[in-house]
Length: 203
Length: 378
Image (cartoon, rainbow over all chains, first blue to last red; front, side, top):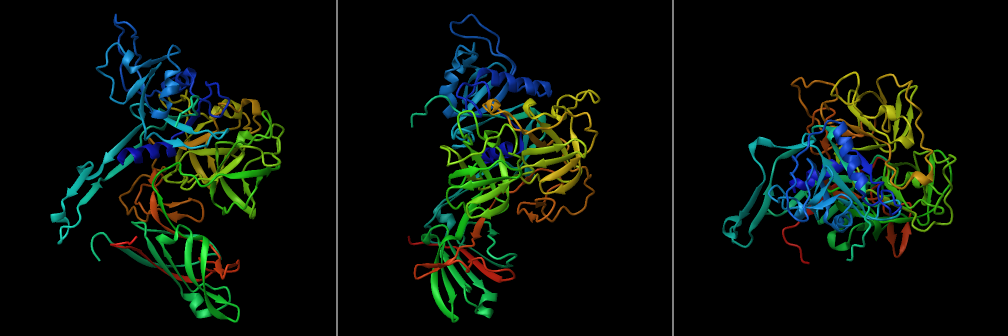
């Protein structure tokens, strides 16, 4: 829930760049490698801090060096489009020289952006100029956003078994409690890269 | 009543006949009761003195008491725009897509839908597929949020945009794929991203397509792609302040959709929304956003009381958020839940009385009671 709040906060408050490097003729277009380059350039120009240092190339078949990078949160529905960019700049996380710094949700990298995918990434269904789904890919520098856990505590998952939840022990209690605030600490270090999808989702 | 039940009560005075009224609560009720005290007292034809809604009736319904001609007390139902619950916690929730029948070139732009749209002044909408042909139409307006400034009829509404320009072509005969849909919860986190309708480089007046929700002293940053002009405003590195982007301060809030920024803009190239259709694929809209870094509205916190909660929009007609307090100008969480009393008409023996309104008439005092029950069967 904390992640969803921060996700919605960013897509509400941060500025957007529409993808234009794709070929589907929509607005925004599907992702092209030039879109990754443009967003990274924009963040660099605004002196954003990158999250990850690069991974040096190694003498291993099928691998390639990874640049120092910003993080981008994308939808899992875009993974097939990412695969379509292999050979144009996309490196799967399985083609990193070493996987030691890859996060569990990391799908790969394009130039100076490492892509994390999640099924909870924001999507505006049927909202493009040509009625296609619009994906919000949040690209952030290290100083862009923060969240503050108020009063010194983070999220608590609360479970009370039925014996403690009522006199007749009929119902259990399951709840989440957190006190948290979000802050956009540096507006120029975050962008929402909006795009549509090229591949058929097949669902 | 045990720990799983919720109940709340309150009252309000209707500001204008048929206005929707949103009641914010810490829960979503499954039973709502309304008592229109004024209607009880007046007993005039088309009044709705009481109403009951149960979640099992469905969203937008209600069972009502109704005053018929005579006057005589009757019963009826509300089958649309009745009582409904809401949970404004997640962004990107849209209403049903509605076919756009036509858009004439005009400033401001008037949109005609193929069927009654049901929108109200102040609603925020998103339009898409605004092509008359593959190379003509008004797709420049696609993907931006617009606040409805006037509702001309059940099938027309007005938005702030100049479509009476050479690169725009009128839409006619319900073009395939031309839709409009309502953004259900457009202002969850404030102030949000705003799209720019116009920039006056002489008066420094910025016009946005929706309520900007800024306050005087707020720091803002512009993001304007080349196609729209005025790119000198963009928050690129400031050559006068090394290490800082170019930001502007809001010096006046002129209306809910206009504000003035400081600085000398006379050397800024003219802003234009007359972008060629051929440039639309991949076109990023012109935007202005609040700067999060030093965003206290220019007024240092002096240790005073932060309440009441900030109210949005900031110029007029503001409604306090339920999640305050907040520092002036800082980002505000405006998520909320509760129920809405709509303007629905009483349907008596199958015939709707369009003069009746569930949410009452101007000046009506209405008491409400909302419940979330311990046990619901089904």
